[in-house]
Length: 136
Image 1 (cartoon, rainbow, N blue to C red):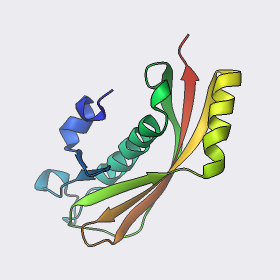
Image 2 (image 1 turned 135 degrees about the vertical axis):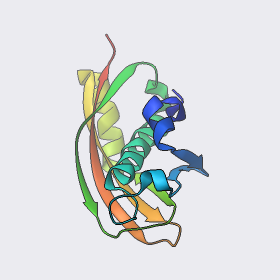
Image 3 (image 1 turned 90 degrees about the vertical axis):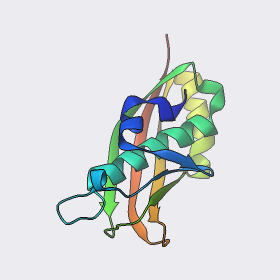
Image 4 (image 1 turned 90 degrees about the horizontal axis):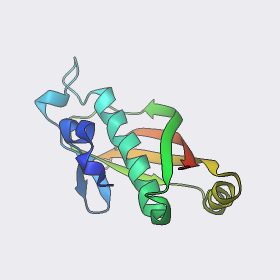
């Protein structure tokens, strides 16, 4: 799946820059104090977490249904700059995910995401718990 073709992702304006997703600061994404709106920052982070899983486990792309189950997100700094998302998972999670998916047909995987602005300031950090099940 081309994540950039998801209608909401297109609407918000998320783009790929290098290996990560980014979002340009614009008037449409401003909040009441003229900084980047919290929901735009969260949308970038959540989308990056899904893309990261898709890239990490390409063998499952067409055979599973990934659903965001929960998230924890902390906003650190306001910004008026372009933002970029970086995602990762714990090494121990990688093999545990594959084992659970193959034996149980479902698994939960936690993806960590950091959002930085173009000045390298941390804007937000988050954890995204994905519930992934094999298609029947």
